[in-house]
Length: 520
Image 1: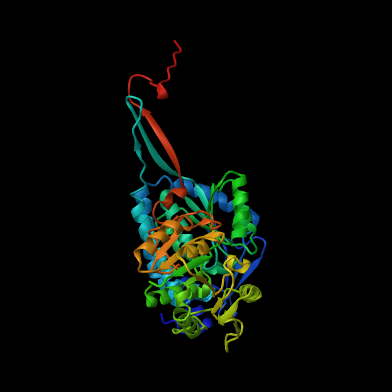
Image 2: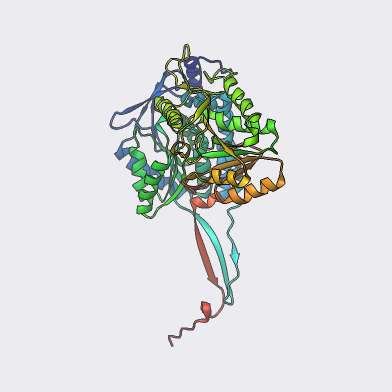
């Protein structure tokens, strides 16, 4: 499909292809509910403010019914052998492949990404399906040497049951899939509470994946509950029938989720804020560093948790590298992301624009100098959109409050360093610990970075930017980023419970630690 640039024309095409309507349900518990309380969530495009749809909001009673259905589905789904579950996930991946263009465009319409980024996100969901298919035959447990004769000791893994996934707007499909497809192949059922800013994508994805389950004669295992102001998310955090909550969002809200879930001794996977830095040394390849820093700062209009927000630049590069970066920011076209030469689309809403302006004001009050940007844009034909100019700020101290605060916008703070130890100290002084990067061809610098930064961030990058991650590795961060891990590697263990099994196949009952016990 040719994307064009007309929001309403693309909306009509995408809605027709995906079976969406002007009014859609935000509750799926095996069927699409109407919203018992009659509340509707209006969905607007950040591109031009156009109203895309109205979504029925789930009520408390409907949520209770959804949880009951989820556990009923779990009893059937978990009884299916894991490799067979993997075959179902494979079919879901194939269905997503058929819908990659339409879902990618829907993401672009709803959250303001470019169609390339939207399609890339759907491709990430497909890749996770492929990963989960392989995982379905690799849910390994360890065999352990027993100290008792004629005993076998081993570990096995069981699904938790029904897990809750609460996602943010900036990756409205991919982050859910990191959790959902991995959890499902283990045998879990998933309840999804998306951001109200990206609920339409969640409705479309839920419809696509459950069509596959229905065609296979299987129960619904991917359930959906859209809310308007966090009510369902709060219920999920308190809900004892959800043994795990995976939450992606801000640090303050993540702390509330952790407290609520921890209060009932539930589990959490927390993916919270990032305040990521790229260190550029004199031994860096300047072209690679320029592209890596620019992409890290500008992709998705600075609305990624892995966005590069701090550039830690050697003092010798301020007269060479920095002017080139300022030029790159100035050349990046801001506008309708549906147009092919636009690199930076809109922020998600007006509140994000206000946060952008407030952060720049705070940086200037802290002694910062704006080198590029600092403009809220009103674009012809897109007056209802949320556009800002990518901004570079120099001269703010590394320990300033504004530098330590994550602002979801394309703002990059430039921080000067002289020695590598100083660069590392600047990097690690923020409370968040998600993604990090160093640009250097000096082996000693790189190894020192991986040694020092390795304990501070969950993601460490060498000669590539902070933004973006491959699905094969576990994704997540340390400190106030929450410590959670999703996606690849052994992150699957978050959605399973470990059981140690001891089997006595001998004629006696020997006890461990040499104990004796005689009842005769």
